[in-house]
Image 1 (cartoon, rainbow, N blue to C red):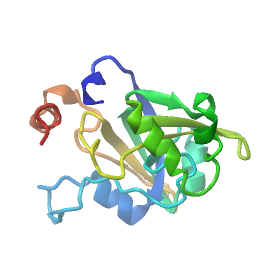
Image 2: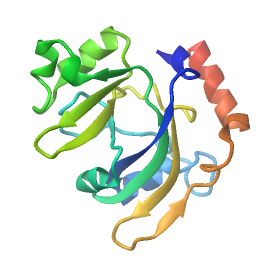
Image 3: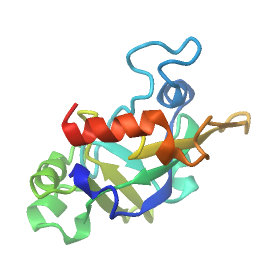
Image 4: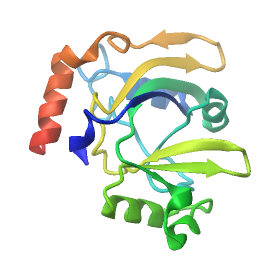
Length: 182
């Protein structure tokens, strides 16, 4: 549901990943040595306990649990969000087990972009943006602010991450592409 971007809030969320993945995700395709086709793209990892997608957490400690060395702090517009605890039983029953793909299928069929999941065994919230096909990799949807290297404590600010991003050419092009269907 790409038409929801102006009505939904944008939250500051955390994403745990490896240092190499973080470097690739936040790289600009036209900057320095980052000219590969995978730069700037969020990839889906394994597990998928709340669906198949990109996972974000409202708590830094949750992202640290999933991290392999880095945390990306970002502003995320989650879109229409499904509370998986309120989903039909056949969807909810699959959550908390590996590859809960029914959550993704049912969510997308019912116009949800993201699933919200309370992980009772750990006592934290997670958000799964149902994006294994990279449909939501637009700058207006996910905007990295900075990367924290957990080994060194170094914080790398992402150029443009904190500025007023709506008037940047990249964002305007992303908005047009998402509305016109690439």
